[in-house]
Amino acid sequence: MNVDNFRLQLGGKEYVPIIIGGMGVNISTTELALVAEKLGGIGHISDAENGYVCDRILKTSFVSQKRKKYARFINNPDKSEVLFDLEEVAKAQKLYIEHTVSKKTGNGAIFLNCMEKLTMNNASETLKVRLSAAMDAGIDGLTLAAGLNLRTLDLIQDHPRFRDVKIGLIISSVRALSIFLKRAVRLNRLPDYIIVEGPLAGGHLGFGPDDWHTFDLKTIFIEVLDFMKKEALNIPVIPAGGIFTGTDAVDYLRMGAGAVQVATRFTITKESGLPNEVKQHYLNAREEDIVINMASTTGYPMRMLINSPTLRYAIKPNCEGLGYLLENGGKCSYIDAYYSALAERKPGEPIVVKEKTCLCTGMANYDCWTCGHTTYRLKETTNRLDNGKWQIPKAEDIFLDYQFSRDHAIRLPEPEPLA
Ligand SMILES: Cc1cc2nc3c(=O)[nH]c(=O)nc-3n(C[C@H](O)[C@H](O)[C@H](O)COP(=O)(O)O)c2cc1C
Image (tube, rainbow, N blue to C red):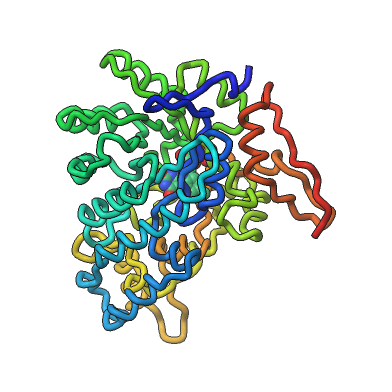
């Protein structure tokens, strides 16, 4: 039996039950999401730092314009007036999503990973604009992530596509799911799919640095299935986190999963947005190099490679141009950490910011190497080249390996001559 023996049923359509998870900032690129879509699965893009991503790939100038507008705050720790122009947020969102969905060629779908914790100094209005503009631009599905999303459905209930767009939710416990569902029932808008993310996933986590290893995806997944049965809810449940082979995926599909969501194996593909030299760091990682810490300013634990450059640099907060993680009122824990380090610095010594990192800049520059726990196994999935580097596989090969492999086999890519 392989993954191809199963199909995900969603809103009257059938998909290959493989979903490539959203990876911000622009790690799950348009090109990566489109591979899944072409092969009949579902690919995510992420709208994290959407203005910055547009500038990079579509040559717009959202960031430089915003930085110019707020230049007077560059040396001011008070960022309360550094606000996003909602029309510009909508414009960036539409440009990026239209750019992606206009290139669809297959029978699959393109979904958007939308993190509630991207608070942008005006949490609910900016979230509403991001979601509404995504629907206007023709996104197939919205995956609500990084947060409990308790009021998110309310924000978009008047949008004409509220009942037609697919809406899913990422949770890491039955408790978070049941709280979300209470509100969804009141709006008569249940989610179309539920992603259960376990402790081995990449990005931000619902588990702490000290206790993540006491949880496991299978147990939480079964708890969610039992809860759904008890509530007589028939919504696809999709496990994520540590599903490394097609056979791992089949185990979940046989237990009743609607599909699986995977990401780590795609981080090192040609289509991933990570620079090639960073992909080599992922491939070289050992298990002990992969840590969970509280360096993210979101307040959520995050998994990353210990040698991420962002953990070592102390740059001035960059909120005038970026500012995606400003809480309402213009607060960010990195600003506090930076200015107290500045005050404590001895003359002639560099600034050392402990504990927090400037996540906006770190993610934008691909200097925060967030990753899944199984990153240390990526070396099993490709060939070592004569020059000591690793071959970079195509996303299509990885997708098809998940779809057709058996017995935990991992098919290596066809060797390529050195460039
Ligand atoms: C590099 C990386 C970045 C990620 N970024 C995000 C993100 O921005 N938002 C999110 O909801 N999940 C994010 N994730 C989680 C994935 O979407 C996915 O659910 C999870 O990593 C699947 O587990 P796997 O990586 O073990 O296959 C990220 C994962 C990785 C590996």
